[in-house]
Length: 321
Ligand code: ADP
Image 1: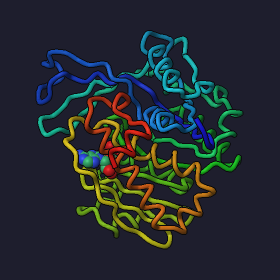
Image 2: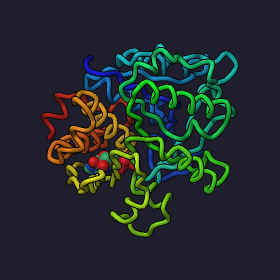
Image 3: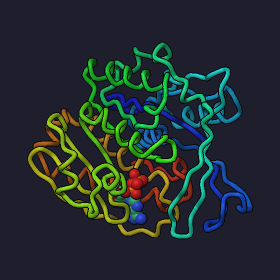
Image 4: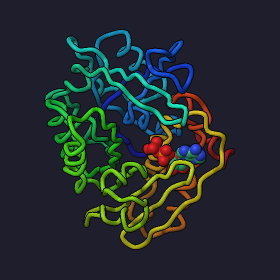
């Protein structure tokens, strides 16, 4: 692996994905055990593309936690910031695959180990080495993980890291939609790079049509780059000076899990190696080239089942695009 370090912070869990779609959870004939959790997917996406990647979070000291830690290690993700909680279990998600291809989630977080990460647990030495610090919003929902999340962001920022935020909204996890919106927006202005999906943009702005006006209503003065992913329709990008659309790749999607994580992970793995983000922000052609690469990674990820098994390496992406 090469380049600056990208630290991803937050939850890692197991998705139980039914072997057939279009049936209720209890009627599924069987389940596949799929490792996931958006920040962990991003950590593996970066490492698979040859980047230097670390994950910070807490797992249960159980069969699932040990399985997840070995998946991180097998994928060359640095695990010095991963802890095991003696008393709590690893988070689990039970997925329903609807016949229209969308997914619904039910979570085991009662509380799960990821929610019990404390400020004292943080490996600050590792976090201070990050050139990019990436996080979501699920770890904001409850204490003590919320304080750990805020402290980790603060330490990374003070040490000069670029902060990258993908809210990765999973609405059923919040007590109410209002609280979800409030917590997501509470750290909005701290981020340098933000990636949202079209559905998240609708949720956060209340817009009926996903357009530039809606996206730009979320702009904040310190923001460097805002990305709106549009699934099979590609992505929109916004900087202080320009904005535009990068067309998608046409693929036969079988499972869209992890596409957004592949997209942002691959983009960060490129940004971290450029001299500075500033150089990309001043060069629209270069940004579009990187976003084409990111769209390619997202598209490839949809062509295989599961998130982590589908994340591509550099050669696969270059051949594909
Ligand atoms: P999220 O997983 O966060 O909802 P998206 O579904 O928008 O994110 O996917 C992220 C990126 O992956 C998209 O911007 C696009 O480039 C690519 N992608 C996702 N779904 C498809 C698809 N069905 N066909 C082609 N590309 C896709």
